[in-house]
Image (cartoon, rainbow, N blue to C red; front, side):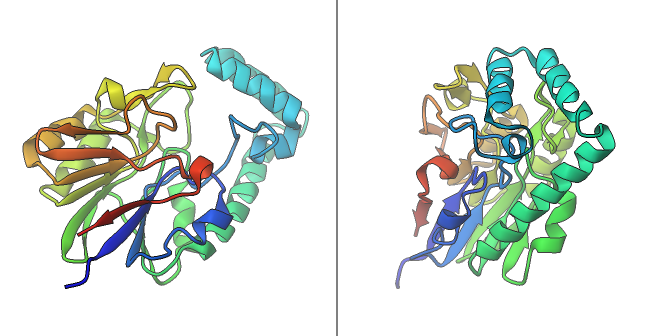
Length: 260
């Protein structure tokens, strides 16, 4: 019997050209979110923010955020938005830019694609762009190639205040609804320090304790995630489960492949 192959991507962040090829050679594509590119920390000229305010201001915002001076970063952002009309125009400008990115990226998804949200995504917009062949899942299960996949999207609350951050309790409730699966797919990692530390940003991202507990309790064969772009450890076992950061697709342009 021929092998079944699923290509998995996360943290696409506007890499539409590579996304159009991400399903090559696979029977299905799984996307673990973060389609939007608001600001590229490696190239400060790319993203919604520098398109509006220029690379120099983007570099200043990155500097403040990297130093964890989040209050100053928010005040700096407010000052810039004040020059173009304030909060109302801010929301409209961001939504317009996000819609443009979503139109391009959802059009690039192959059939079939199974996708969940990242912390920088805007879930309310996805139904407008997810065409036939793209299944959006959050706190839900689906069978792919005879194996059961569970999907939980979004991130936990942080000082960054990205668009789709939810409480620990809401996230845990979604994890609980999944139950036992063969492959557990999330945007954020389980709460394991080696999986959470970003070696370039030099900080720990937030992971989920509820996710870690579910992995230990239900013992899926794989737990797949992204979110941490340059993790200290990309792959490790937690009990019977192989935990895999599938990679920063915006930077590598390469999907991670799962075959059986």
